[in-house]
Amino acid sequence: MGRLFGTDGVRGVANADLTAEMALGLSVAAAHVLAEAGTFQGHRPTAVVGRDPRASGEFLEAAVVAGLASAGVDVLKVGVLPTPAVAYLTGVLGADLGVMLSASHNAMPDNGIKFLARGGHKLDDELEERIEAVYEEHKGGEPWERPTGGGVGRVREYTEGFDKYVAHLIAVLPNRLDGLKIVLDEAHGAAAWVSPEAFSRAGAEVITIGAQPDGLNINDGCGSTHLGLLKTAVVEHGADFGIAHDGDADRCLAVDHTGEEVDGDQIMAVLALAMRDRSALRSDTVVATVMSNLGFKLALEREGLRLVQTAVGDRYVLEEMKEHGYALGGEQSGHVIILDHATTGDGTLTGLMLAARVAESGRSLKELASVMERLPQVLINVPDVDRTRVATSGELAAAVTEAERELGATGRVLLRPSGTEPLVRVMVEAADIDQARSVAGRLADAVKSALG
Image 1: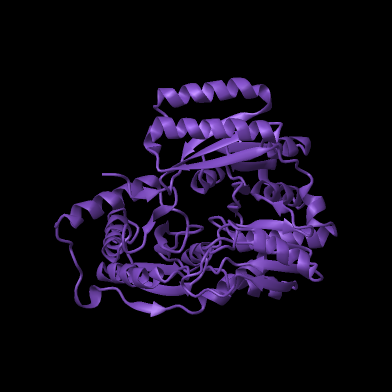
Image 2: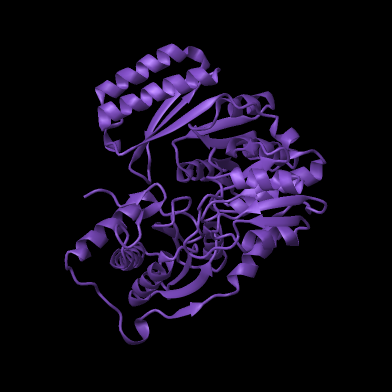
């Protein structure tokens, strides 16, 4: 059996890979596993359930709610809200479990289920493995132990979640955003209402694009994976900068006033200096993944700060941060975790903090982001290959060795299987963009040859 849980929950094509039956079964399994682990001991359990605007989220939400309630868990339905909002509400409401239905930046036909532990943190790998094992066991016909009468879970809408989350975002800002004009691209996703409300309440003049979700248009040519519309809008409106989220708004990328992209590494560099100046960057350390640009590490070193790197995936960044008490971490893709105020990547919070630094400093985002020089980096996704053999293929290992010999000390190579999609990611960094493209292209061909 292949593992259902990837680096960010269970994902697949809704109603094909991820069915209502699976959503219900996984939810019942999660309730039973957490009960066995003692999470519900001594009280009646509660879960917070939210989703992004995908059409499939409507039936999947119904299945998850049914599964939890049938297992004796009371459910608070918070509706369409970002993943970090569901995480925040899980923590602040004292819920035993959070469930978010989203496939993040994936195309609309996909959807996913992400379970959150008490406090709003991601579940440990061991608990996910146990949930999957229990789900498979009962999918085969093993009967569940089911409560009856007053033991079944009760379900209610929790409409206060929107205002509670926005109020939290405003409360943690170090300063207001008055005088800034900001374009927000909401990817027709979960932050379509929350993000503009938060930026407006903080004092910014807000222009929105991608903020009319209809269940079918999420991530469609907009948002953090398609920055073209945002670049155009920022320049056309003469805005100070733009912010782009993905479907569940746990990511934030930016565009400066000239239309140039500001990626997650640059955002973290700006925030690291801002937090250092407020004595909020504990141990003068930032946590990022091995995908971060070498220029990010060099920029931090010049400022007397330290970079700790982890495996790819915001869950590994978060684990490192929690273990050592670090305050800032994230990924080049725009997952940024500000651990004093969030338990997961929070695109709206990140955007607000970035805007606060621009407002407080009186400097443009372009100038602030120039603290770091991005070395040329090429990323190629190679689909339809056996991602499980990346580490064991001799042919591929030889190709990587040859590429590293060519790049020498001025670059690096990284091959990794995607945790959420059937593809292998090839990343090459070099002092020269043409060399990076050439080496990446050859390695992509080698991946197809060895793993196709």
